[in-house]
Image 1 (cartoon, rainbow, N blue to C red):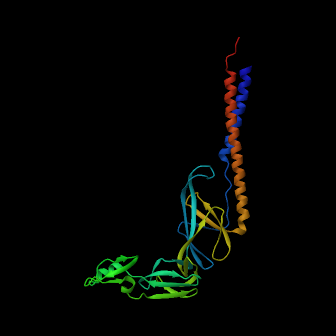
Image 2 (image 1 turned 90 degrees about the vertical axis):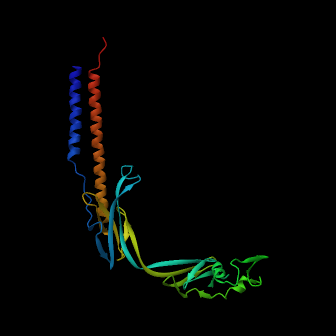
Image 3 (image 1 turned 45 degrees about the horizontal axis):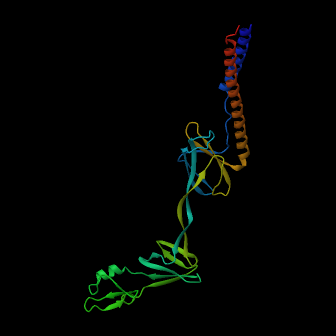
Length: 284
């Protein structure tokens, strides 16, 4: 009688587990249906007069994904050409910069209102090219001198060198620098900043569900589709509530799946324990 009852319970738990598995096998995850334009890697589109190129790929993650571990995740960006990107260059005080093909030392005045460029000279090269003087300077009491070969006469280095060319600029002045027409934007006691605009390739990072602002001033969000060819949908944020609703339905679906797996596992354990105890030897 004991084994007969055990067999009934065993069949009950096996049927319960099989039923849960059959439901799990036929269940389909709700889709995320984002109403927007869908693009593949290399696709191009225009918004607000700006051309964008879509870049999407699968990238190995270091962990922290939905499963808590690593794996490939979709990533993307929108690449575009900013025709008027702000560019800057910095002149540090006492640094050397190239201006009009020559080397100049940067000198900033104490009240940080002007920049002075003072021409510098390649002293070793000048001495090498001047046969009238020795190739090295001489330092006497902390002052550098150039020595003439004919009579060993010493002349101060600053007197031997030609008068340096200098340029002075104030904030707002236009400076032709490094092939660009720049503006002296700001000056302080440590550095001067030049600014100009020039075309530059830039990019906007795409992340699942994250907002981005495009050239028309409106906000959009991205949704990646990884089944088949990797794609990304760019949708206006006015539909974001629908997107969140689809995600909520997917989350509910996964919760139900986890519950069914729990039923399957517990049913298997219960069936095993029932059979094991039914066939245990009885003393006496």
